[in-house]
Amino acid sequence: MTATPSTTVANLRDLGGTLLSGGRTVRTGLVFRSGQLDRLDLDADPAVAALGIRTVLDFRTDIERGEHPDRVPDGARLLVQDVLADKMGSGRVPVAAQLKDILADPILAEEHLGGGKAELLFGDIYRSFVSSASGQAAYRTLLTELADPESGPLLFHCTAGKDRTGWGATVVLALLGADEETLMAEYLSVNPAVRQAFAPMIEGFTAAGGNPDIALALIGVVPGYLRAALDEVSTRYGSMEKYVREGLGVPDETVDALRARLVA
Image (cartoon, rainbow, N blue to C red; front, side, top):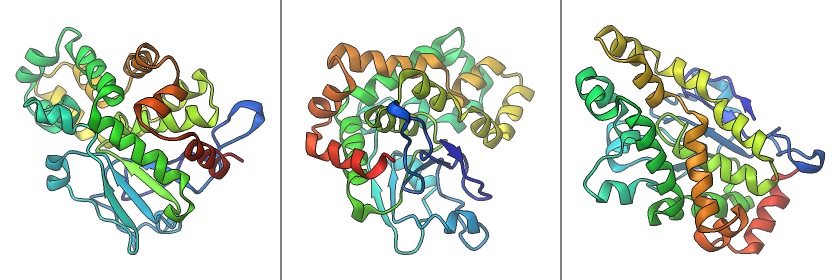
């Protein structure tokens, strides 16, 4: 996976080039991941314009989309699949959807997220990616769209492009044949870009007396978050293939089409 230079889209990456089993790779120019597209400006960002994105899949909540609506390339379809809809429906706004509010109040952050609570909360969120109906619907849509040549180059994203988007990338790459070491390396590879994008927020939080460990637990990704989702797959389904087939309801022929389209 390679970073795509952009001045208006944070954490933009092409899954293409990722190494797969048997010496194969993911085809470039077909599937991209990023943070939110609220600042997208193709006139000022020719590198992004050149990608020819035809489908955008937004994993964010209603609140996130309302505060920072996507700017979608002309002619591209915008699909919305709220990964956290079931969590939002429970009456408790997930931490992944309220980073800005939490980092604005160091006392609130310490109360709710200090002492390892952030890691526990993110573990619960990642397990919900696998087990919740809204998570399953979102990742089913991702795989189904990627298998369809008519979707063209597709970009999927959340707010920071690290958690909901990170799990989507993990599922895609695992199905295509990436090993666990590669999956973890690609998952963690977004940390520099995410921390750069949120640097002002982190600096403001710590300057106000906030615990930097909490900021990094919220802004970055760590192996334990991804392992929580992978363990949920193993416990519930036994394998990624069964998770995709039984949990997401994606038929084998769609997986075959996905592999045929994306594996070089």
